[in-house]
Image (tube, rainbow, N blue to C red; front, top):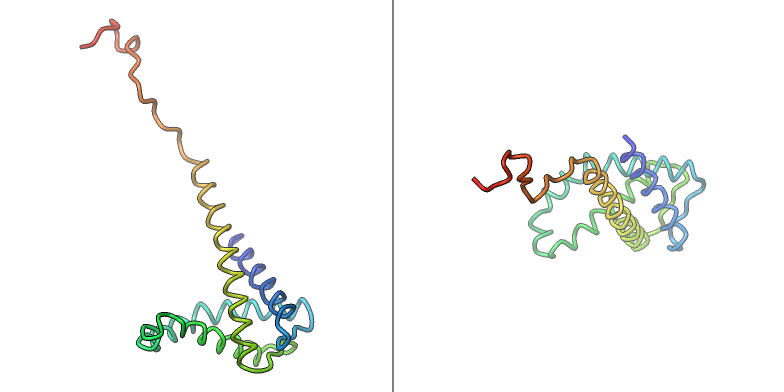
Length: 142
């Protein structure tokens, strides 16, 4: 549950960052960005995989670059449904999707790293590489 909340926060910050960097994107308030991040997350979970499968041949031909177009379209859909989020033009949506994707990718690198460190610290210690001959009995090789 904590990881989901962290990812939601990261997407919210990415939307705010894209609004600050790209002149064609405007976010009215923090609550608008939070709602947009939640809706974008839901769309990415349920609709994006279907679009990726439907456009797979085109995505293969463009060597995966068509995924950026899909991300831009999904961002425009979110802007249509969320009042207070305005995206003027497809180029602004494309650049915004690029900023959001890069920010999300960078944050996921740190989230995965923290998860691996947690797993490593919770495991049992490795057994020693030596055999204590005194515990075997007579102290000689058998």
